[in-house]
Image (cartoon, rainbow, N blue to C red; front, side):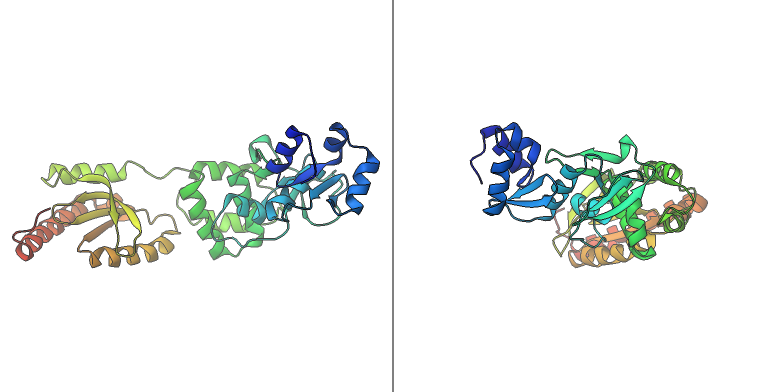
Length: 318
């Protein structure tokens, strides 16, 4: 790295090796000095007035930082933001995807420009490295134009699990709902497959089931029991009776993505059986229509598991 003053050195290191001409001039450089360092290969011109220190690698983050330095209102979004947020189920682009307003002059090279007439403060996250990145809900929405329905559905599940509640995504859709917006039809197709998708899922359902089981003499059950499976993965069971290696899970299949989750559940259940655990499941749909019957079934399954477990391991210690 060139011999920068201490503060500028810190700022450049934080920005992945990106520095602006205005900051160099503020540190005492002249335009002639900057030009000579570019000719010598010490600084590499990325955009007008934006350089990368030659000793810093040309990383994806450096490209995003350079783009944000070159346009003070541009925001990294779509698949590029997904890469920065480490979303799953999205391809990893090499170029920054930039959101700019319709009256902005786009950067000439090294980026993919996308224009928007809706870019609110809640859509933007300011990182300490100078990158302005779309918030997870906005990045999720903007990914819809570049993914197929199946991939976008899986992405939606992942974002709901890791970044945003369903009402938050619903509000983002309502704000961005405008005719002709790329990806909007896909967003509506995927989100409309959930009944009452504007409403949050009933987070108390699991507690209602566990309370009903305990009233029937099962328990006390351990809530969110951490179980390490045969493949090394750790799952948290909604309720568990470790004394007989039995667990109960409540599946929310009302959300159409549950069919994808169900595939993972089958793998988890097989790995649980490999370490001697039995996992029994109930769905939100059957609990909504036949709650008492489902509880009766779970009570019977627990009783049978208890008898089988103790018969096979008369001297077992829980």
